Length: 251
Ligand SMILES: *[C@@H]1O[C@H](CO)[C@@H](O)[C@H](O)[C@H]1NC(C)=O
Image 1 (cartoon, helix red, strand yellow):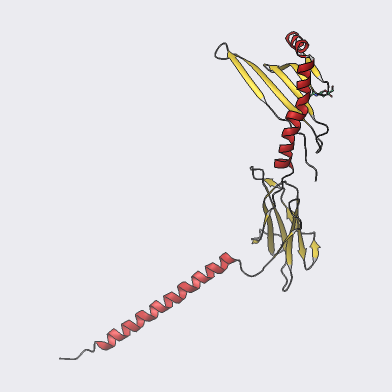
Image 2 (cartoon, helix red, strand yellow; image 1 turned 45 degrees about the vertical axis):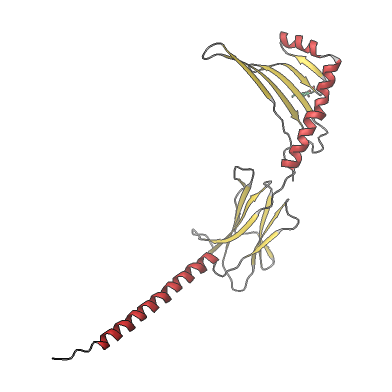
């Protein structure tokens, strides 16, 4: 599993002086920490001083000193390239960049959240097989995940389609894998999900009996029917009793 580890941290100080409704001058300072190795050994600190959109003086920790890019920038670089200020800027690689990168690394990059796995039956829209199962993994991080199907102990490769890992927009992802199949009695179908957050894969077996919501609907319907019959029978008995009690006697 490899993740892009080039991160840059921004610290932007912005000052603007408006001289009119449309014109503005922008002064900003942009500090960047650039690295790509997990042990942070290739960390580079860049400190940019920007006027409008142009960097006019920059400290680059690989270069080890300030470099000016405009007349004003060159003057600043000359003034700032003194031992004490350079020592302070060079120390930012450790103090600012590596310190924050370690926090980001443990809190974000190395963080893993296990998926919630659900197996369900879905209605078919004219495929080659009469039945379709959907194995869904929700709310996992990072996005790399493996979803596979087993049928009677064998890995199923054909008639399987999977979506991409879809970002929820809140750092978590979801993925859905579909298996088209022709049901056989007594077979065992299961979905296996593996992810960096798990010590062993999650395996969910397909239970072909009716799902709980369907069972509930049937139970409610059956109770309603029984109740209806009881009320109807009670009504009938009451009516019979009433009509037999009132015997018309001819006068
Ligand atoms: C910093 O300096 C090194 C060495 O000159 C250079 O390779 C690198 O591109 C510079 N980084 C930036 C962001 O300018």
